[in-house]
Length: 336
Image 1 (cartoon, helix red, strand yellow):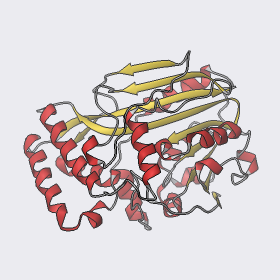
Image 2: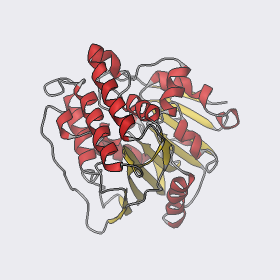
Image 3: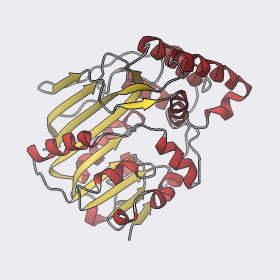
Image 4: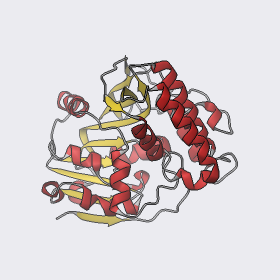
């Protein structure tokens, strides 16, 4: 039987998940459907790294920022037990209805911030010092990275693997791809502006932290050499921004930060087939609404501007389905 443990956290509006307050299974099913689906090759890459570094056991995996468990589910075929943790209680509540039944008896869901995961909230048999793999899925820009890395280090066994990844904007790869990319960016930027103001609000530190991480392709995150080894930074389609929209979507300045350590390996790839999908304009809309959940409520009557721009995007797409790939950054490291 799956289990759930909880801690509490004060609610503060943050980027990417702003207003992600849906409480029913339908909301979270649509949320997952609107996101890209990592290919099996992506998980094989992580597991091959795990096999070839440190202690290649496959007993316990932990997906941080698991939401309704869609990535935790993808780890279940490889690991004996999977923990999924998140701060969003409604997402965790939906997980048992969305994860295939055959995996649930090998899964544990934990409500906790990532920074607090080593405090005893995870059951001891799958918690501190018992974890073989930690995936940090689409949430690292929101975390206090120093505290989070300390928690991840405590959870992992010696030789365990840390895999931090984040996917950003879609990249059109056929038809008038340049025009489609430009219109998509214009739409995403306008949607982001509906969240203004950001500066001088309680959520501003999260906004600044988040955009700095994406502007930097996660290179702003230092991986301490005294605790981790074998650091690899993989970047797919790095010729486009990882950031979801342009700088014009924000009311503050930010720039790229590089804190990569000596001896780390960076692999940059342009691959139009990576996580490839075929989209019509409706799927572009769905992705935007999953990146900026419930943004229509903030936009109000101004949402008509987005509808007009979506018509423009549909015209640029020729009213057809078009191929897209994604910008993705992955950090791999082994606990010393």
